[in-house]
Length: 313
Image 1 (cartoon, rainbow, N blue to C red):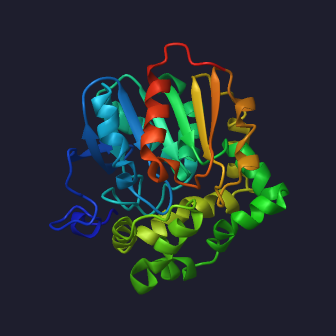
Image 2 (cartoon, rainbow, N blue to C red; image 1 turned 30 degrees about the vertical axis):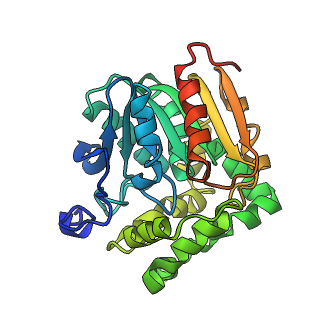
């Protein structure tokens, strides 16, 4: 059973359907309904947000991509923003099918996937599971899932940096902490993970409001619970084996040198899982949110790469 529209950010005065040059609508895919914001015409570029955010994190890239001749679409992942909150379906394989299902629902033959943080994890997954639907892949602030698993289990520095993921394994308490004091923790996490230029207070307020929509905190945490709890389970082992299949589309991998949530050493080396042109781009002086911390530089890098007919290895 999904939450009613009025409780998931789609009703009057919605905290997630934010006005701008984009258009809001819902699309059906993989047994659920997903909110998207879109701009422009041309080849599809599908933007996937991370934690603890929603589609609005791509507010700078939507117009930049549209002006560059692309159809830019930012979707809310299952359980977040204006999309359905379902009781189950938060494992990465199913979330990746949400993404490829949205591509089909948009009437497109394929898309360039651009994912940040959790959205990047799912973009890697979708490129392996449904390669015919992924034209190109761009990932920010997230290693390949097999690299993520290895780093979280064997690199003490990354284990410490990702302590929030281990903390999410407790029942109910993490959800309560996320929404306490008008979701103050959401603002703190974004500030702590950002580089030296602090995020604007108005932006933090937007993310805090979105997290307080009923069930959002629980749904936001569920993917991380699966990622840890499945490490020794058959489904998790099977997923890890499945991700051995190489990515066979051109890949841009972006990372901030000051990312304190996902260390550079953890992300670097993901190219070993790509059997196609792979470009590693390290942004000096930026943290976990390069697309927001320096949107002009990020958008320029992304657009130039998307337009490059022969991206280098």
